[in-house]
Length: 275
Ligand code: 13P
Ligand code: ZN
Image (cartoon, rainbow, N blue to C red):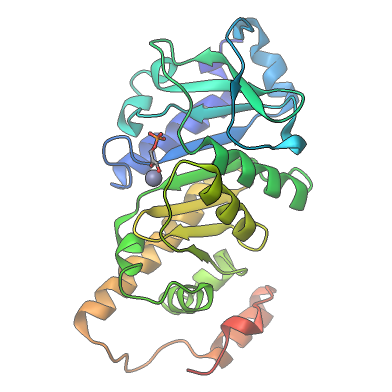
């Protein structure tokens, strides 16, 4: 099978286009990765090549040794992925130590995988361990309202989680574990990857102050839907804060407990504090 005919590649391209249409991907902003299933690698094997050099990942991901990933290219624009996938995305393989990668398909006009590859792979490694291999997608975007909130809310997990939960009843059901926040750091390297992957042990969402958001999930729909839900909630909060600094009413801790019981989710008490 041709790479571009594979369902996982089509799903990847669709997410890139959906994200661009949401205005989350100015210029080359954002990146996406997918941990490919062995049977999916097998199905496109005829198009994979193994003559490109190994290059250092910049961190170590031993639990991903030998695996294949579909990732966006560094400096490539999300809006161009649907127009010319083979020039803007690539399939990489990680080596047996989990320290290097090589490009097996794509980036036909040159280039390298996203500069956030260390964060993507470290997050995928954490999620693979914690979900018994279920989670396969890591998505980084620059959604406007979420970024705006990082200038006005304290950069604390418990504040962001509670404020975002209060803005829409579905939120605690969609992200019951809450969201983590990373204070401003230089992007693109190992340090921010370590900080983000620490948070991914607890959450499916990590917000990077003054930069953007990382989400992780089982598949493209769930991961895009998670980003969409958090950003929608952030938009409501931006609007509320623009109108008033004083909410007249909101969803209370007791309301959250009732919701948790009916929807059969467990909401950590650490986020249901009295204000
Ligand atoms: P890349 O173009 O290298 O993926 O970087 C975009 C980005 O959003 C960095 O955080
Ligand atoms: Zn970014």
